[in-house]
Each structure stands twice: as C-alpha cells, then as structure tokens.
Amino acid sequence: MDFKALTKEQCEKVRQWRNESLESLRTPYLLTAEMQEEFYNNVICNRNANARFWGIWVNDRFQGREYDVFIGMCGIENIERAYRDWE
Image (cartoon, rainbow, N blue to C red; front, top):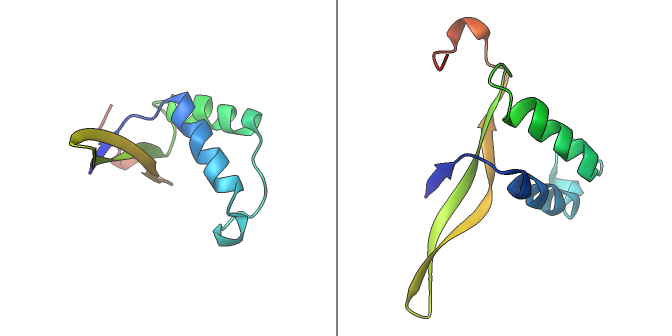
C-alpha cells in the first residue's frame, strides 16, 4: 500500500464513490462536482489548510502484470498550526 498526493481526478472519483453510499457517512448528503473542486482547491492544494489528505494505492496483479490501483483517500483534520512541521 502506498500513499500519494491526490489529483483533482482522484478527488472526483472519491466524490462519485461517496455519493453512491450515503448511508455509511457521517455527512449523508450528496456532494456536487463544484463542491469537490472547491475542497480540492481550498484544502488539498492549500499548504496552510488545517488538514492533509492522500490517495491510497495498492498493488494488484492481473494476467501476470502488476498495476497500482487507486482505492480511496485518507487524511487527518484539525491540525493545530503550532504543531505543523512541514513548513
């Protein structure tokens, strides 16, 4: 398993997955493409955001070949500015 920077396309894929399973979410409402793009621009791309998210990738084999497969995203939220060490 690897964790990699998220792209806008991967965030859109997560939005689609999320909207298909609302019953299991803490915020059970549909997200629009515009809402997800705003999240991508304001959180994922913002080095000053109080959250960090990554794409989750696993290695898979199919017909003797190996592939990296994007399976979701994970992150941490509510990061206190005093404790950030990536700046």
